[in-house]
Structures are given as C-alpha cells and as structure tokens.
Amino acid sequence: AGHLRGTRFSRLRVRHLRVLVGAQPALTVQAALFAFAHLDPLLFPSHFALGYLFGTLRQRTGTLYPSIALHFLWNALAVTLEFLATSQ
Image 1 (cartoon, rainbow, N blue to C red):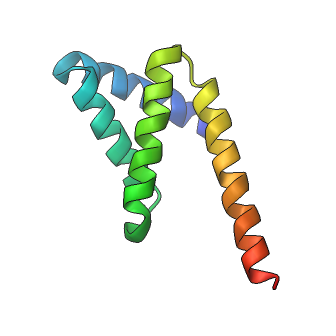
Image 2: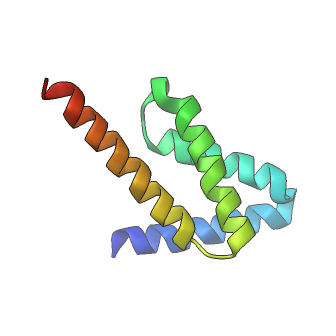
C-alpha cells in the first residue's frame, strides 16, 4: 500500500512539474529524484538513466505498468547477477 501511495503522490508531483516547466525538464527532474532515492552515489548515473527511461515510458504509454514491469525485470537481473557473482 505504501508504494501505491508513493507512486500516486509522485505522479501528481511530476504532473504539476510538467505544467510548470514543461515535459522535458520535468522528466529530467524526475530521473534525478529516482536516482537520488536509491541513495548510492556510485550508481547515480545508471539510476538516472533508468529513471529517465521509466519516465519516458510513462509519458509515451500513459500508464506506469510498463515502467513497473521493466523496474521489476531490472531488479531481478541485478539480484541474479549478484547471486551468481557471490556464489562462485
């Protein structure tokens, strides 16, 4: 339930930001917030790129579902690779 509330709140913030500054700057800010939320400075560039991709998917499809699915797949890949790297 917490993620759903956060998602709804985030969507409202991005929507308002888009009205204030335009779609492209809002997408950039959203990607930066996504990267900062992961609290790992070393991974900021990759998380920024992912946040930008997820935001672009949201803008083009009009729904969060493709972004959620891609985020899930990305996390599954990261966990699998970490498991394989540490199990040898």
